[in-house]
Image (cartoon, rainbow, N blue to C red):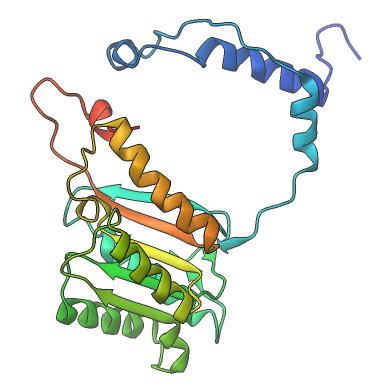
Amino acid sequence: MSNTEKATPTPQEQVEELVKEVRRKVSFNPADFVDDPRAFRDYPVKYTYGVWQGAWNTTPPEWWVEGVIPKGGVGFMSGKPKEGKSLLAMDLCLHMAQAQVEPTEFLGKFKCSPANTLYISREDGEQLLATRIKEVCESYGWEPGPHLNSCVWMIRGRFNLMDEKDQEWLKAVVSEHNIDFLVLDVFNRMIPGLDENSSRDMGLAVDVIEKFNRNHNLTILLLDHTRKPASGQSPVQLATRGS
């Protein structure tokens, strides 16, 4: 090996380099970060290689949508109103239903596993949902069949995740239909009275979501609307509200 060639870093060296990078970026003032992305501060971080070393032996995740949505996960799909979030989520649910009878790929790329899905809508009515379901199936050439019954569609004029009665109703539906995958459309209309800009309020809502996730082995997808930035508020600050 010539003097100019660099030896391939060992796994431990790679981890140590990563930790150095984390130390440079682990803590920063969000306000400074918005104004100047370079405004990271170097804070000391305690580091034990044994903890990282265990990461090499982790169990590979199982996927509902390969490489995109792991089984048992909780995720957000966020965007402006009327940008197609609901249609995309419905398309996803139908792909997992169709996967019971033939291989399907979400977005034409990501392999789907069969799942029993529950889609709760707080905005779109019965006619719009039925029209979209029909259009999605026809666009892929999928024939109606009993396998599509694995998608449960429910329209709720009122649904409050923080209400114990609504929580009990959701538990009963999940148990009755053996639900694997839950879609809540839209999340911010299912937490009335909570402030999305408050980390405390969002912590209460996330606690409820995580209990459903753990206690019922549910994968949960939350659809959420972004809002127009208030005066003096940057898009970055808006996107991370309540975080």
